[in-house]
Amino acid sequence: MKALGISERRGFHRLISQQIHYSLQARDAENELVPISIDQGVGILVWSPLAGGLLSGKYRRGQQTPEGTRHFNKWGEPPIHDENKLYDIIEAIVAIAEGHKVSAAQIALAYLLGRPAVTSIIIGARTEEQLIDNLAAASITLTAEERARLDAVSQPVLLYPYWHQAKTAKERLSKADLSLLAPYLEGYFRPRVTAPQNRKPRLSSCTGLLAAWRRGSKMNRRPLARLTFVDNGKGPPHCYWLKILFSCEDLWMVPARRRRVSEEE
Image (cartoon, rainbow, N blue to C red; front, side):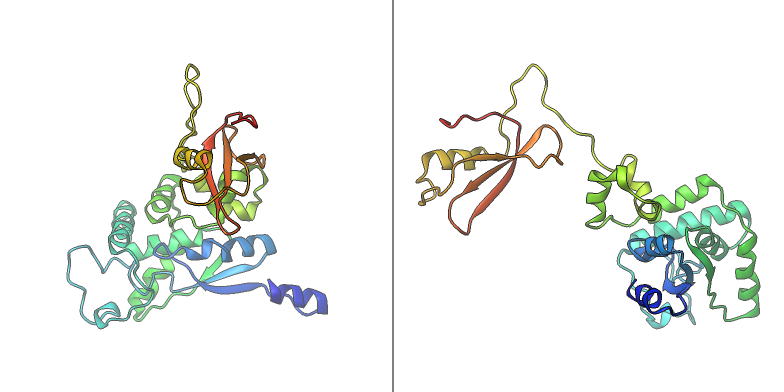
């Protein structure tokens, strides 16, 4: 973004592509690099789309690592953070490949070629046979169901602030934002739980703190501020925050169900 800003401000030729690592095994780029490309009209050139050969179909769960391969020699890149998830991804790729009667590598490459902002991929074939096989991926069209299956099995954990944006700002998300957040907007968050209508709302986890505030000396310090309710208008309608100040350094913030409290309380 800084380079794009400088080029526009000084009248330089604009960057038109970024070369990044991106694969079904490592979708970290979807957090920032892919949305930036969509927003700024920059293409993506992917390196190591088969994750150093991990997605080629040669590596299978419970089987010995093939001799002569990178990972047999402890290549170690890209890093494997979750081996079980990696094999789940490989098994899904292999199953789809069998349906198309093609190699697993072709399915992994075809998936990337259909991702937003991806304009091309760099293949690292070591033999003519691998080169011919990889090039054939350009002619494969994955169905929506197949893409959904690969999306689901490889879906990374949504990091902050993205889960917060999906929860509180989904009406204001741009096309670039949705490239990451769209899969999480349906069924990702737990449904809101409200108190039964025939039961009075009760304070939840703040009961102990509220009692301590009322007694004052429970924690051997005198409260410096009264119990107040804070509502920033952004949280769920049934939730406020209880704010209790026990000293200049201690500010306790705990969620509670909505309840009116008089000054006498």
